[in-house]
Length: 545
Ligand code: NA7
Image 1: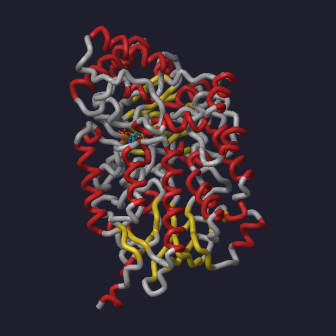
Image 2: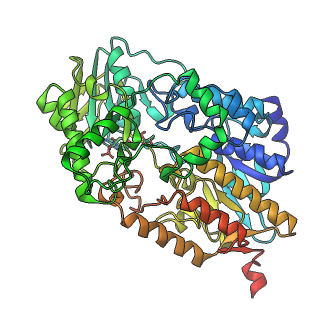
Image 3: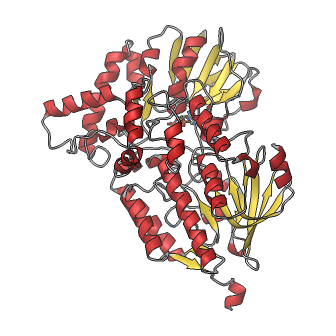
């Protein structure tokens, strides 16, 4: 904890408590301070950066182009920072986060090593009482969750989990010091993005690497490269124009597209376009045609192209077969990788499918599948996150009448516009359930939400109001709208963390709004129309009676 933070912790009343010091929390601190609010942020880690603080596994990097995956609220900041690679590595992203924290003097309002454990709303005072694992009790008018979407790790309850005698790692909670796997037999569970990014690096080091795969995924080559100095200069000469153009794209970042459906082109043209997209690499292979995530038949054409590519790379036909995904491409988030499939041509790599024979248990020596014990010196859990709502429900939050958010969301998380949950006044969720969040350029979505929240509470203050909350009917209409759009796509056709189906017992609900850039316009309209769907200064029930 910094000296400033410990001094601050003496104060027990602030205007705003912020949970998290990732990209959302950092910008909130800066923006709200500028508007004259007193703020206190709590952060579980020892530093800023959120996702990029925790996910330090080898090979970790962002899957959105760095020149776009960065703040745009400060022209000076975007001019002075130099990205070195097309897709920034985790260390570079963390260096950027630290640079922002230094530049805007953010750390003095962050209490590190501290997790918010509970928060309750008092109807009589209209304030939140927030409690932490370090014993803090702090009263705030506004309570803002900048908790991220992929920050609560998922560690499946394998029988014997704690019995393994060697070291274990979770990709989402990787140690700060380098881990050396040289000469070790390593087992890794999971084949999501974290695993697929780290596998080529682990295979380089380990004596032998065994990968336990439940669901084969689609990994598209990144074709990562240094960003050319001329390219940087060109963008920086008109950075705002570049940002404005990119924000008009679905997902809020630029990508090349034919602007045609896969159905309206000849087989030859389709193949040519897929090949060009494969050579460009990246997430937006899926944007080659406009209907890949909405039309099953179109999606099948992309799957077929992908399978041909995979079969060309992986030499052993049995391994190639096991690596072939069997669901709609893009239904789970595409993975952007480097040398992923090539790694399976190494002699020190083995793939074990646990699709039909789930992991039975963990033993002191390794992992048991189908009655066979695989022995390891180290195990890596790349088993993902309780995404989107998980970081919020991990806090014991109680709103009006003491109702808990866990109970409210027992059948699925919902927030009006992804920003506020009915019955939880003055609580805002940055990139919360029901917003474009993970289906958009996260940094852009974060900035948009932070600016909305800031404008909203300034407006309340200017008009002499103290409390704002979502109307229950507006929230329900928004939930139905989010679901209705998801129904028109293939996103619900497989199991994924988008749906919460990676977490046993979690309701299967699609909580991401597929609708950038309309969403940005809708939000602007809400502000212009004086916040329809929100209730200001609603009296407590007792006063209503
Ligand atoms: P993901 O994408 O959720 O991947 C987790 C992986 O772990 C995935 O392959 C899971 O298989 C696997 N998993 C989870 N539980 C089990 C059990 N019980 N047995 C076997 N395998 C299991 O998390 P990541 O950290 O890789 O990536 C998250 C996002 O971060 C990513 O999409 C990017 O946006 C960045 P499953 O597919 O559920 O069958």
